[in-house]
Length: 422
Image (tube, rainbow, N blue to C red; front, side, top):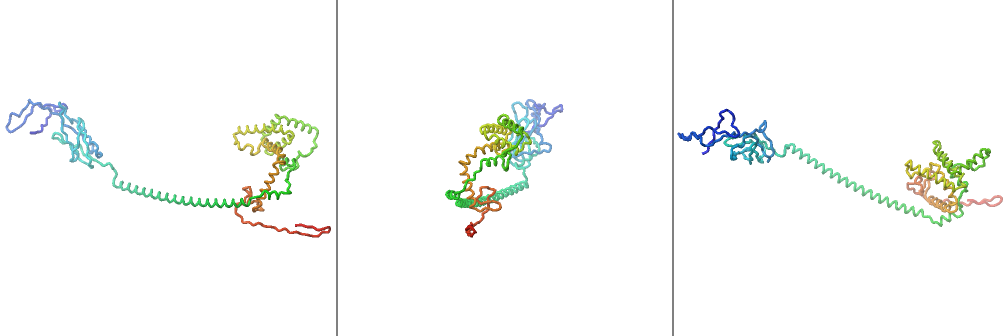
């Protein structure tokens, strides 16, 4: 026989304490049985009823499938001696869940179903409902969103396929263009090789032919004075250094003393550096000073060499201090030392050119001239097919023919004899 314990209220009107309260007396009402109306010899203690908190203000709790449901409350387990526990049953909808009970909460595993379900707690003949449980799917996307994502993915896939097709076509066109360019380069290389072969055959010169053409040709060596003047003072045919000047005695004495000072290395170096430091000392003045100094030192080439070495050393140090590019040194002839170096080579190379290098250089000039004349030459611009100068090169292909001019012999009688001419 099972019966429910009746509810009681404390005599002072308060709620039942957590540690329980025993009734004054209890008993059972049976049919005309008076012996069980009051049973005071059995220990019987009342404990407060469990209380479960609701799910927030709206009474709805949202969770994911498989998540734990925590039901908070108080007096969930009585403080009775011996560890007595209450039997709880939690229904989510109509499905019971696995339950773990503590003093302040009930831990329940939610079912794998989705949707909104009412939560019911059954214990000791009592029933509680903290609210409804809304179990939503992991995917929070709506159907339109899913359709949009699918359409976007399809468009992206189509775009990728279009890009791949365009890339493949572009690559094919590039390969075709590369092959065409390679073929053009091969044709150009073959054509250039053929032209070079033909030009080499045209420009082959027999040394015997050149020697025969030079028989009786005298090498046009210049006199030393003319050779030196063209380098020292170019463009001036009648320079004062070539003339005997009528000067007053005091001027002659001053020039003699100045000539003695020129033989002083310290003075001459200081004199040249002082002139170069003047802003008004132009390039033309530098060339004239260098030429005049070399003319005055022509009889003392050893002294001129020592002086030139010192000037070049000072020039190199100055170039390093100003951090100029080393390749620009001795290229533009902007100093007295550079111009003196040119004149120094001019004086010392004359004998070598006349005795050794002059004849081979002249033969080289004649050979180049002869080779150049084997091809067409523009009579107006001076451009030639076989020119060594890139600026004077005929670049286009010209079909030309060799013109042979006949020579006629003319014989006439003069009063004193016969005259012949071509």
